[in-house]
Length: 356
Ligand code: ADP
Ligand code: MG
Image 1 (cartoon, rainbow, N blue to C red):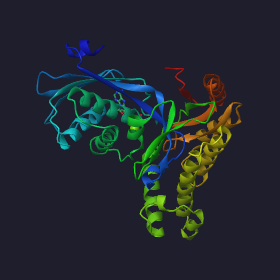
Image 2 (image 1 turned 135 degrees about the vertical axis):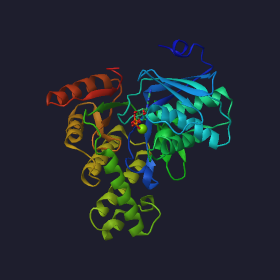
Image 3 (image 1 turned 180 degrees about the horizontal axis):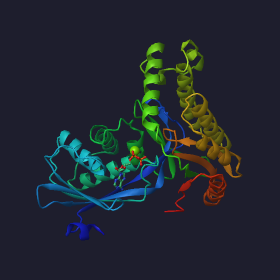
């Protein structure tokens, strides 16, 4: 059902934002470090209208779910919390937002680590900004989106996902310094494109594992006498740390250095090596990989046309990203998924959008 059928009126504003995949710089954002995400081709679209009563009405086409919220009501749960959060952070920022009709449709896979949540927040904020002519720039939108996710969806996220949804495009890689928010678009290595494959293993331990790693990094930074691990650039400095803190810190430091090297217009082969090294570091030093991700990465790495591959996202399940020869992504992904699923896994190609 479309907007008109759900709400019996026509939309007055429409905006979209893409999902994202991170190519390099994993578990660095909460260490004030560097990341290299790119937008994926899939996006989320939000259509808006004015509510004729004092309630917000939200509808998600993907979930086929409608939620009604008194705008004075306390925070809702589920998908409504992301949209409600966007409205509330705008109010906190001083804007007057009346009750709204919000219709969401998306081709970004939900809960697969491609950041459907940030796409939803950024699309919502863009649409509201458009409808009321709010003077919001792309960085402000990303920051408001992050506030909505932290305070209303209850997810302690960094700023990468929202910055990527707000500023990245799928033709470039977005370099972001998560401390200073310095950012710029960099080209893909010549003659390359990306593929993303879901391992089929759910990220069940991701939240507890993520929180534990965050705590370990804070502890390591504290013992090293710095504000964040971003302030350490020499791995030898980690030698004084007890295990596993020295391993965790080594991952963050080498990962930041890999991102900085990748910025130097490296060859596709070198970029691929940096991705492979990132995976090894996430597996051995950061210990956030699982056998399924290691298997998928191994298959990707030995497949002709693949320059490099790694797990992407927090780990403990979820997806892998690979840099491949441009024009061959579809063929390579199909071949890899066949081999991977033949072993008994239930993987799925997420980019390019074959199965959607
Ligand atoms: P990811 O951001 O990696 O996709 P998250 O768990 O952070 O995973 O966010 C997924 C959640 O975001 C969904 O469970 C849902 O609540 C919300 N969401 C995202 N996109 C949509 C959509 N199109 N319709 C409804 N809810 C959505
Ligand atoms: Mg998310």
